[in-house]
Image (tube, rainbow, N blue to C red; front, side, top):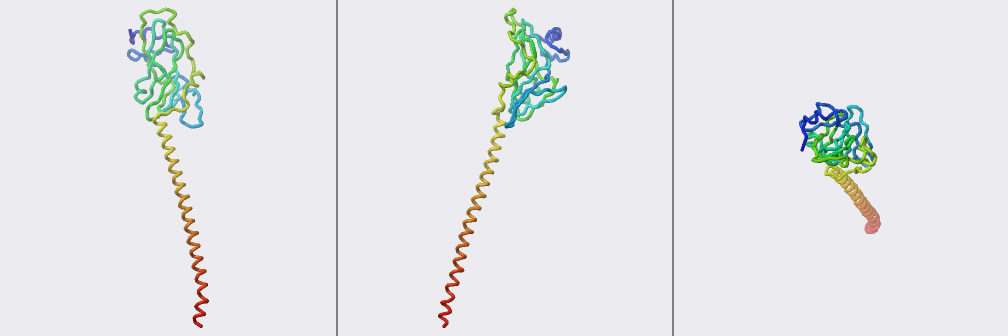
Length: 232
């Protein structure tokens, strides 16, 4: 059974740190972007790194790139509940897709790390503390301590997570950019080859015409004596 906004308002202070009553959104709770983000890069030779976001600072996810985003809030999921998570609709319609999974296990404690992909045609900018994620809660039929999440939760974007993300993606937008670069290079090469061919052919004809010109001059000087002998 899914739990509504009234339950979140009543139990939210025991689940979220910090808890903001106005973040209750119908039957969900809106979670904010935290102070870390990790974005893959489209630039060759660039190496992505975890960005530390100051208060109100922004992070940009280019089209076709992956990112890890961490929540501002810590959560403590009750052992008899589990949660469903996703991006807010305002970001989904721009093409930002959650690819990390859609649930949080019972008993999980820590911040939530979202793996996202920008499938849209343009860059997407997010700001620290911006309402970015939604979480819903459902009640389990039965529960006991053995159902609780067995590992320590996340409190930062770890190097293990960062190493799993592709440095460059093969999205349609990135492939289109690479094809445009190849097309420009092809045109440059063809233009250079054409210039070399024209210069070579021009040089050949210039040399050939020079030979003909020298032959005409030489021929003219040989005929002069014979004319003088005839006139005698």
